[in-house]
Image (cartoon, rainbow, N blue to C red):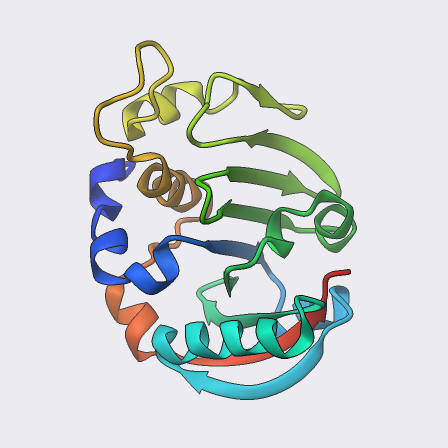
Length: 201
């Protein structure tokens, strides 16, 4: 059964340092090393837990004036999870679409100004893209394929926006629906992440 937005409400409460600006990406059938190669990245030392990753990502940003983005990766089943604190590489179409060749790419992003993107690509084709806060405006080759799922998850498609914004948690739930991968507090806290940096400009 599809998880609803409420199933990810813990994220903003438990991980406030990353919750205000992040990009989470899931890539099917590629190892972290293969993802790094496709993104022309540079391997970095592994990091333990999302707190270390977040601190390192902000230090990386400050040290390179935003020219390189730290990405933290781990394998979850058949998927590689990429996490970018304060990043957006995973929803950058001119990087994502070539990197999605032969695979599925599911990513969602939000920044400190509450601008967000949900992106689903299959084999270099953009299937669905929208801002989770404004799900009525969608594009891609299959913009309406997931409408029923999106309603069950809690995206406000047929009514006024809710008093409590659950667009971020809803994006996590939609990514889980597409991939079968559940992001959990234990996964974020306990994982030793493979890391790399990627030039973003």
